[in-house]
Image (tube, rainbow, N blue to C red):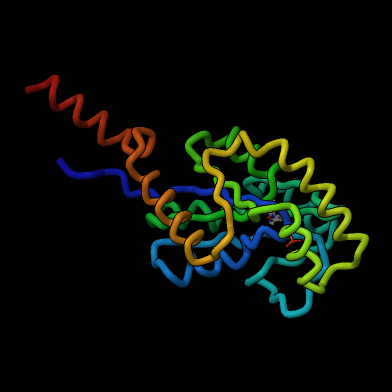
Length: 209
Ligand code: 5GP
C-alpha cells in the first residue's frame, strides 16, 4: 500500500498589523523548501519598496470587484477601507503539487476559509504585549498616526477572534517563532483529515483480507 496523501497543507496565518508576520513568512520560505506563499490582491496603494506581483497584486477597486464577480478569489475582505483577497488558481495548483501553501490574511478572510475548507490550519501570531505591538507599528515609520490608531482599534476587535484559531504563536524571537510555525504545519500532515485516503484504503484492505 502506498501513501496517497500528497496534497499540501493549507495554512492561514493571521495576526495584528505589527505582529511581525511578514518577516516570519519570509523566514519560513527561506528556511524550508516545502512552502509556497500566496500573493494577495489588494486595492490599497503600494508602500515604498513593495513590488507588484511579489508583495501584492495591486488593483483598483473596480478591478477588484471584477475579480469577486468572476469568482477568482478564495476569500476576500475589507480591512481599514481597502479590499484584500486571495487568488484561487495559485493556491490550488500549489496544493496539488504537494506544496504547503501559506495565506497571510486577516481574520474575516480566515473565517471564510475555515468555513469553506474546514481542514485548513489556522495560526494566529501575536507580539508578546500590547506595548510591543504599538512600538512595532510606530517603528515601521510608513503609517500616519491616524492609521496606527485605526490598526490598534482593529487589533482590539481581532483579539476577540483569537479563540477561533487552532494555534496561537507568540512572536518574541522571529527565529524561534518561524521554527514553531514550521513544526505546527509539519504536524498537520499527520492528522486523520490529511490521511483520509490512507485510512480508507487501509480499512478496505483489512476488510478484504
Ligand atoms: P497590509 O496592508 O498591512 O499589507 O495588510 C493588512 C491586513 O490585510 C493584514 O492583516 C494582512 O494579513 C491582510 N491581508 C493581506 N492579504 C489578504 C488577503 O488576501 N485576504 C484577506 N482577507 N486579508 C489579507
